[in-house]
Image (tube, rainbow, N blue to C red; front, side, top):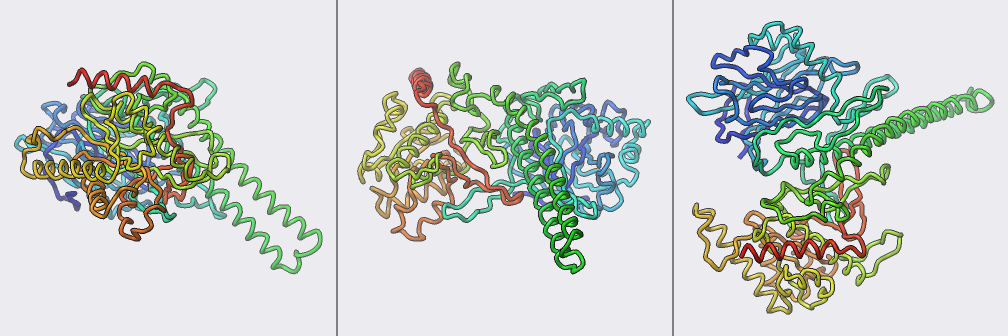
Length: 624
């Protein structure tokens, strides 16, 4: 349960490896200082800031941004360190905010390895301050605690550093601000549209949602960029790009993001690209909308004035209004094209560097595939893009283990060439997408840690499922009402026994006939072959299964289950809807984007699926 702290309140920390997340309405720089038992910081070498982002036990961002993730390993801090202070400051850049009182209150959170928040603190009641101590992690009698501080400094970083006993604070503060101004980080600034008076329009906040199958966009909260696990000690910071001698943007580097390992840095970089594309597109759309509203207003003023309604004066006013509109749109387009070109260049270096779990099926990394020793942080479900940037695809990564089931919609849909796919074709494509996704999930898990079961009551998916069954990666699909009932009974029993074992503190003490590997149940042609009892069990697995390693992958047309009425609405809402063909059903309600989703499919004629399945089954045989 998350503790909501107020200024001065503290909370114990039971974990050594943490992540501190910072969210602000404007770009801020984040840093940290290491102090002794009296809180004294003995020199600039004890300060982590964008110019020196890594110290033993702490890594901060090398840039100013509206969102930060600071990595902390309390066990790796020097023995002399008893206090870690997290600080925020506003960059001294043209057009930037000058005081925290003029922007939205920054929010901070401390999370554990599983991404769950331990404490949360919002820095309220700030006014003239341009630097603030947000949190303090301190050691008392061998135990660590976190305290909400919220102490601001109108004198900026220099005053904050002086309060912590540092010498030459003005020079150190200047070095920090200079490091921000010359930052070589990847993040793309958001061009802010201005109104007629020159004031910047408010910028949206990033979030990510799925659309309800009936068309309503269902909020699921902001994107969570944290990861479920960290298995390596703090890694050195990734290499920075070097600026071109002619002043062009720095060349992007794969893995140029915060993280403990290359895999995590790539994961954070991909979601950073998603956020950058969302924001720069939002800024472009906002600027174009503003130009259109301004044109409409000026034309209305011309029509409202009898003296300029007709004649040369009216024509001149209209031409001026249209010229101003074109100028504003051209400026917005130029800024958007610049940002899009930088993101495209980044995608071109990131995509080839992705590990198998994140890579497309046509990535050469699959040709050297070997069964991994541990599961990845996330898996790729497909790609996302926006209408303004169709060539640029952002990988859709979801963390593992899956927190919710998946549903591949096999209902009639519009094809890629504006052709309408009938039910049979849509079902075939949906099952092909399900098989590709099942193979990917099998491939990214160690041998014996992930299993796939299939329910195909009428046997309609036998041909599409052939790659899985022929390789021996899955048992023959359960068919008929009896097969459906038996499979659901076994998985329901596994969920019940695992829940009881976890509650009793004996998670490893399961009966020998219970497969402890994570289970993926593919359900084809639902609700054919399902009676009321089977439907109830399926809903139970959808609700309770993910927490104990039982996951659903349904291939179904919602219209086929209309006879159940609203009874199954909770089931559909609990699943993440995917489509076998590109479709704009993924929504970003904070920024207002409808993202087009494209499934991750195997290229026609490719034998990579069979090659990967051979490796998986061979490794499984050795494991047994």
